[in-house]
Structures are given as C-alpha cells and as structure tokens.
Length: 192
Image (tube, rainbow, N blue to C red; front, side, top):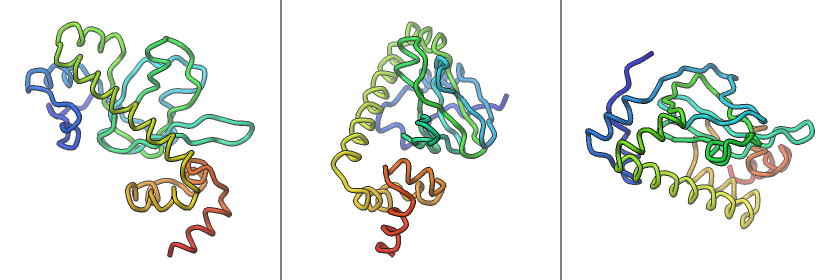
C-alpha cells in the first residue's frame, strides 16, 4: 500500500474544506488500490461498498442495454465517485464502474465512513457538501442531455471538458453523447 498525501488537491477545497486534523483523519482511513485498464470496480448486480477518489487515471460508469454499452459518466483525476443509491440503500447496482486506464484510487468502505462521521462533525459536513455537489453535477448532466442537440453537447465538451475528447474512445463518447458514430463524425467534420 502506497503512502497517501495528507491533503486533497486545491481544486477540491472550493467545494468543501477540512482542517488539517480532519483531513489527516479522513486520508489516514483511506486504502489505496491500483487497478489496471479494463478492471471492474463494480459490476451490475453487485452491491456498492465504497466511495472512491481518483489520484491518477480514469474510470467510467456504464450499463448494458441489449448488446450495447451505454456510458453515463467519466471520472478523471481528483474526482470522488460511487453508486450512491446502491451504497446508501444496500441494493444491487444498475451499472458498472470500470477502469479506462491504469488508475490509482483512494477508497473508503461505507462502514469506515460511518465511523468517521461519528468521530468528526467536520467530516460529516464535508461528506454532505460533496454529496450535494455530486447531485448538482448529475442534475446538470441530465439537463444538458435533454436540452441540447448532439452538436451542442459536443461543442460543450470541446469547450468545458476537452479531456473527454482526448481520453475517451470514440465509441464510448458517442454513447455518452447519445448519438451514433456516423452522426458524431459529421459533427466533428463541421467543427474543424
């Protein structure tokens, strides 16, 4: 197990900050794990037991529909992610969490988090603020998918999330945008 730096990256502090003591308590209770490209963190039907934080690498969330994978989210460095519904309700997950690259993760078991919440009101507040942030991100994503055309979605990615174009295979990107590969190819030609 690799030593973990006792702080979260600066870009996370704007959402929720912790004092050095609370940060040390939170980080000190994380486990590290290195997963290879193609490894599953969670498969449809399993129960989610962890919250993860990506130190390096990339993961995705997807579900299977007929013979296709439907990508619903991509996670890169400095991101927390989980299946909150499965984690909270102890129910089977409806999607997969999968490493797209060799990825170094910090992870906390849900029982460890419960203990940390009892020990530290500050960590409880941190968790609540992060949950609120994740819900806002999900709502924004749903609105983005329903209110924008595939071309508008692609333009937004180019402007706000270029890492998706750089790091996500085209087939997975098409699924995420809700469009066919042929349509995305036409959109890409028009935007060059």
